[in-house]
Image (tube, one colour):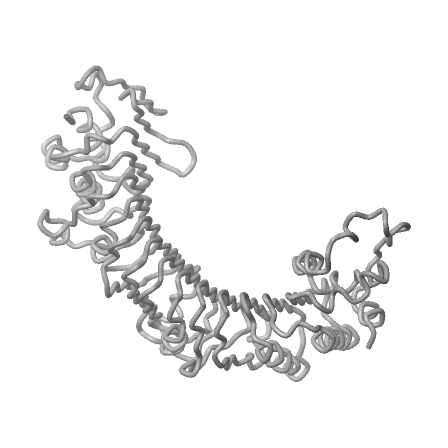
Length: 455
């Protein structure tokens, strides 16, 4: 198959050729640079450049990157499928690169399982060559609803640095997998055979530094998601609503277990019902943590992230116990300079307010505080004596800016470096260290008033 024939049947393109080849500066570039430039284009466009001139006719055959994408606007028919398969087969056969830097396959038509069998052949061909840098595979998310998913059985790929798997992928027993150079791994909305699928995959990634997990499918079959990577520096774990209820009902458990002692950046966004977070090792090197979940074990989480410099907690429906709020059990945050606390649902005995109090007292270097707790706005009125009990005994002398928000839009109360407050509902001011006008007698306001008496 010639390059002219290859680019005709699949998505015809209109490309203007140059009238005078010598007048075009790009033609003066050496072949390796042109190969590099073409590697940033989808393979479809790279092949289409073969019609520009004789100089360009075979340049695409030595491009060190393959990027196939098939995302038709409507349901793909048989002719479209055959054209796409013919195109991919032809490119793999004519490409002269022994080793590739990147392979991307993004295919989202509504093909049947038997029509998709060529995918195995394409992957085997790419693996045989040896991917140097990056593999990005995304298969139609609709396939898993009716058809058996593609199964990934990779042997060792020594030089692979980036691996991204999305949608119609099934991870089973990965004991034989070995990616000794892998640094970045993305697993987006894929399926797993059982709880051991993820650990078996991660055991073969001895140099992994960045792990990005995105879950939402009710078919991924994992009740306890175990992440154990000694070299991991960045972890992002995101799920969405409607998914946890399925596992709580079916499996009786929904848990995230993390063992990553070298972790520096942690992002956990769980918008489901209940999750149990289990940290098997302290995060000694932690710089930033952003945690949002509606589960239990809040103070186990707090203890694990106490070394962070920047901390954001969004905790709804969390189960707090009074024992965890005692001074001897609540951890110190020596490194914490920025703290955001969002949407604590009011519990009995005002435990949510006690959380704020403990953070203020145990963060000696805190500089910035952002509180967005709508539940505290609805908290019941209490006596002055009860307010006094919740006044922090210590506040960081470095604390220069506080934001109190009733909603996520505008600050309801703001304190800046000039120690002046602005309030939408009632205007108040602080003269020296004395409150001139009494604030609203909600619990939270009683707490924040104590800042006026801070040394």
